[in-house]
Amino acid sequence: MRILAVCGMGIGTSVLLKANAEKAVQDLGLDAEVEVADIGTARGAAATADLVLTSGELAAELGDVGVPVTVVANFMDAEEIRRAVAGATGR
Image (tube, rainbow, N blue to C red; front, side, top):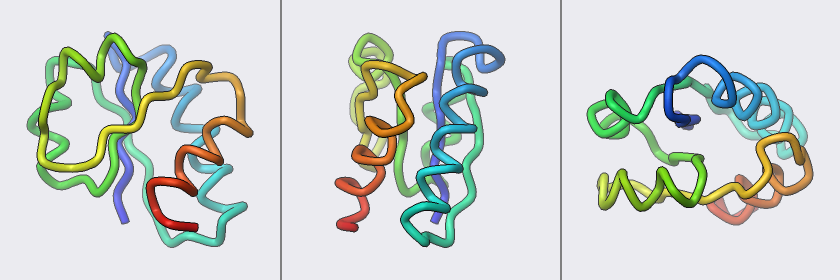
């Protein structure tokens, strides 16, 4: 499984989101790789992803990318991210 963590610039908050998503993946026992992308490259990168994690504002900007886009309100809330990944993967 490939998860894409998206933020505006692809260097700040997406790195935090990536770290928390990697912890969630580990906690859930999933075989997944988490990568980061900025909003400009996210549409193309989503083509090879199974799940996109991002903010509500950026989810609206991304639109339909052909894979589930899950909104995370607080990128620092590891439990929220775990629930988001679990819900999107049926775990």
